[in-house]
Length: 108
Image (tube, rainbow, N blue to C red):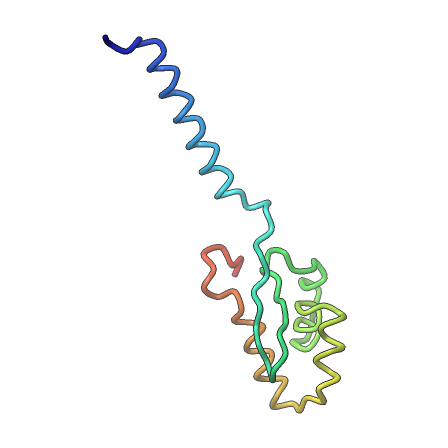
């Protein structure tokens, strides 16, 4: 018994369409990327993907303000409560800035 060519072609087309849909979904840049969790001085901070960061980030004139926006108000208050030094802030800033550097679509 041979397969019905029409049925086989329909199945092949459905399979191809499904694969194309999965590829499109995987490449959909409108979907948020999960945040990266960094550790600093025993605390964890969630850092959003650069393309999911607050728009106000584009208006920043200082690195301090950029880091504050990237971590958000709640995490920023928690960080400040640790009593950081300028040296410590430099280390923290480096961790925040490099959180997504291994991403293929980091937006940088």
